[in-house]
Image (cartoon, rainbow, N blue to C red; front, top):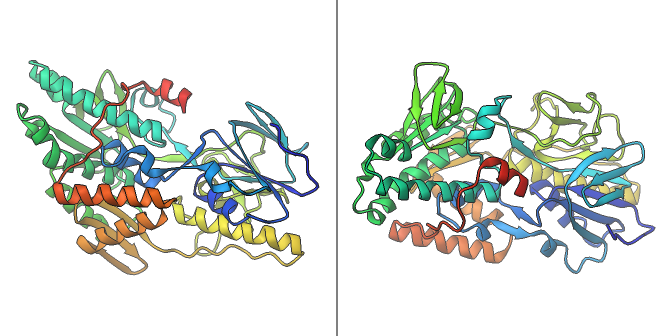
Length: 431
């Protein structure tokens, strides 16, 4: 890997997501050699992926070069690499570009899409966990609209104009709302010779309400907003299969669609090399103590979505959101500094800043402790928070400009097919 030899203890961080990025930013100018490994050379602001997939933002607005974070830091290095295995005996990370020894290892690999063992859905549905996948959705959506505009077959047109999303968590709800806004505000003008009222948006959820992790009040508000926007919601409905452009459920519902997006769950993006005592197999998350140390190890840590820390307040672990990852990254950096000074380590305590989801223009819901509200104020807070946490001044300015332009003109500027839609297998190999 051509990493310089050093007498400094080496910290190897796997993953440049929210956890890894906040950890490395706090380790600048320390007496550690820090090596960041990631299979992409950029950090992705995942909460806004849905806006890229629905043409609200360009991909550059929510991506930030990882090398830019560590530049001018002599103690820090980045390598573009895919990690295959951890050799815990030899303390080595084995990757596609070679092996690297570590003194301390931090796993911050996040999650991957969970298909619950259904290989057919995995092969045929559309995923959205990365920037290439979000662009893939955008390409497919506009390709299908173009096909629908020119077809004379009403059955085929219905299939092309029906969008089905499985999973009514924040991703599914935000996608549904964005599709509905696109239909109402943009497509009617872009396709004057097509009846855009034919465009259907279906949201399927196995639970008895949308946004199951949120409060009941916020779930009800979100459902009301979606229904007002023309989204058809199917609750207590489980998808059985998707094949040959047909969604079948474990009930009577059958939907023929050329666009089926799976957002029904995630699982930890674990790495081989650990026993079941450290890695919880059903969840694919590493069991960690209050200092984020992986069970059975003193020098291996896991932070963010991949870590499961059982506490009195969170007996099933912290929610797989950005905030726990950010806070764990900062706390672990603080403890690494304490190790150098041989001071007592500080246990992690999560400060819950609440949850929020946006449904559309002036429509969002916010849960902050016992306070629940929705509408314009919630939407404004959602917009401000997401701008604040975007990495890089340029990203904030470009995103703010795009949102302001869209708000004033009821328009979405990134309606481009920059590359043809590709099947999931090809995207996964590229990604």
